Each structure stands twice: as structure tokens, then as C-alpha cells.
Image (cartoon, rainbow, N blue to C red; front, top):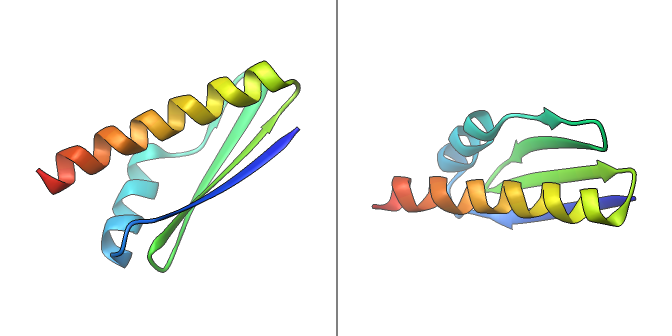
Length: 73
């Protein structure tokens, strides 16, 4: 199962910093790849099942949200 998310952060430098901070991740059931393209952060989640897909996507979205709150004050 695959999920591709694209989040616009309106700033290329911020996108690069966030992508670097979050880094890629891999577990037994899911793999997450994060890249920055211009003002966007692309999150690709590949998982063995729906539960792992949802869990990985939620984790990275929460991490991204926390990082954005810290950066934006």
C-alpha cells in the first residue's frame, strides 16, 4: 500500500530544513521517504497493510506539525 503526501510550507529554505530534520524512516511494516522540492515537502509512505500505513503517516504528520510550530514560534 502506498500513500504520497505533498505539503506546501511556502518557503524553500524551510522545506529543506524540515525534510532534513524529519529524515527517512523504516520499520518492519512501513518505509517513509521524505524529500523537499521547492516549497513542498513530499512524504511517501509504503506499507504492508493499512494499519501500518496510517500509523506511519500519522506519526510523520505529527512530527511535521510539531517542527512547523517550533519554527514559526
